[in-house]
Length: 217
Ligand code: G3P
Image (tube, rainbow, N blue to C red):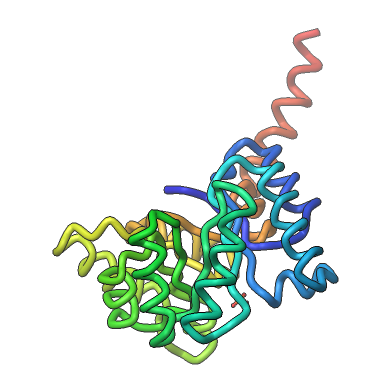
């Protein structure tokens, strides 16, 4: 399973990278705006910096919603660095754009997936990744993990190459549940990744070992 970090914050990206387990980065307009990134030049420069920090797939989302504009914007984003993955929303023109980029060999991530049917359409259009949003489904009392299971079954039935990139991760159990049901990738904020490390018995056990090691001196 690949681990991506879901942030545009460079310090958090560096911290995750330094752990040695980071395979890529996803961003979205909300995450970019949170870092104060404004204007095309600053946006493109930020993506370039992320690509220089992490050697892996870096999702950069288009801001437009018509086919023609998404193609223009996506091509400009893809030209920033070979590792850029053009992130396209799950809308009708988005499906057409996924097919266009797929035919051109440009990687894509279809975002805002909330149903198996949407994932199936994106896979048919040749998306590299589909991003089902677990946390936002859980927020409206719908089981996000069941959606990952459904998509896994459908993709396996037809041997689709499209990878399931579980997004909107809110806590470490989401990551573990994604691993159990076979998500190809999780994209998570830094905190849930770091909380995978924690167990009180590990902390207590280590404290005891450190104490006992003094008797060995
Ligand atoms: O990047 C898309 C997704 O991960 C957003 O997560 O927490 O805003 O629902 P969230």
